Image (cartoon, rainbow, N blue to C red):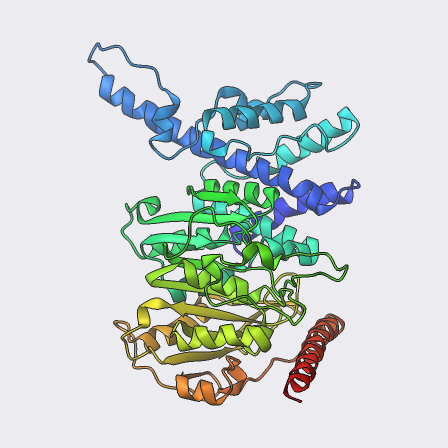
Length: 527
């Protein structure tokens, strides 16, 4: 275990202790804890920059007899560092006298940071007086948390701080179960998405951005492929959308802690398009919610088709049932991604397996996506890759830039189900080497420089022509074209896997009944 891993686990153990000793749920303590990690990060960067500014001024003014101008917040902002007033510093909070209201002091620190760094207005948590109804108990909890995160060394680098933040996001997602998956996509999956779409330079869009992980990994990609002195924000522009205010706050803190900034809007993406996205973006990355029905089990409308008719983002039509309801939002999301791309744009996103073979109106939309030459790569992913679900998924990639190339009427299918590294019996991941193993197949298929010549590999990958896909009734299920060998399911996974397969079977059965009704109606019209 590395020193960094040991630090992560040590810090998390203290947070877990807070929950164990109180009546807290993880979702009740996630924002306050992430806020304190953010505060420690801001303090470390501010003090480091403060020392640098003072040293520079000492060198510049020494022996000159000139009067030094005061240091202002702008000195720090020009260097990409948040300015911290004294009462917002971590050391100030650590040195508060016994009996002081620590919750109120932390709330005030967050308000001061927002006041002097307007990009963070309304983002930082300010509910530190309500962790416990008893003030002395509230103080005790916060003292323990402050001491815990003060273990983070002052010489730690920004990337390491980002690692701590992402580790905590992952643990919160794991603890919250399915709900946690709404805002956290495992790093290994995000890294592969980024490696395939290669966002070197341009506008990046995530209309379901959750905690902002797609942006962070895109920035890491840029850093890895440019000169050391290159500023990431000079290379990429970030645009995100989320409907949950809590997720937006988490995402903005995540960006800030990685030295990034972006335009993130709180909207319902089905209905709203704040960035006028059609044809605007170079890259789209997303992990949208899977299989959202237009009407839920309680007969409540989730997506109103009347509100989205005529929206230019849904240029291939709406996935409508015989009752006039949205059958499934998967193909709404795909159209949002596709329509947002400019003429050379690429998109990479996570999708439910069922979307590769979905029928009825969804199939018609898939046919158009395939016929238009937009679908470029489909990757089948094995089970246990997500923190909170054992079900496998599929990664889709669009590429508008392949028109006019020898890939225009082809799709690359990759079986990655047997590529994984086991974390424990219920969770798997990809190592960086495994990510490169998969991504290199795509680079070979594209004929990129310094890559081997692409070859189909039995059981691993196959390039399939549009004619072959038509012959398979426009299926994009990799199992139709390459042999898929699913990994064995452990005893721990079995019950959960059966529940998920039952849900999928129920969905397919409902689709079958819908199709049966439509056939009967059509026969009546004919007869």
